[in-house]
Image (cartoon, rainbow, N blue to C red; front, top):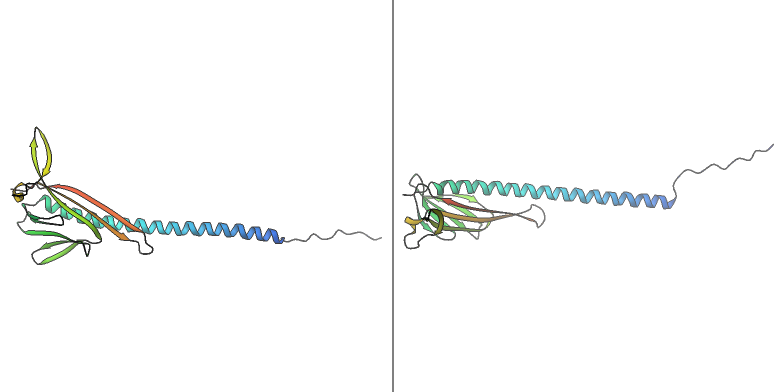
Length: 182
């Protein structure tokens, strides 16, 4: 007696199945790779911005503390300010637009307070009581060292990312009231 056997089923994948699986895994790999690259770039941008913000805040703290304690403003332009600080010492803050540095100069020693700065301005104001309110007004230009009571300063600092063309920017503004003025 002869028994008819079934043919063995062949296990394996067809060419179409292999191509479909390869395509699906390739798309998933490309998606994961682009998510990884986007995440690392975003993290680098956040670190760059946080470092720039930290440096800007430190410079603003030094400037505002010293201006607040100033005895007088002796000279000023849009990009420089000279004060007599609380200890009676002449201090000059000057911005060099070519180097992008804000310098603090006392005597013959200079310190870079801020680098990567693209824009900086100082404005002088006086405070006059008018009908019970305290507003600020532009300082008198003929005798500003006696009338300046408020210094407004603002700057924009920017830094390029280590890789790529992206730029992190930080803008700082403050109005500092001089408290020790005579």
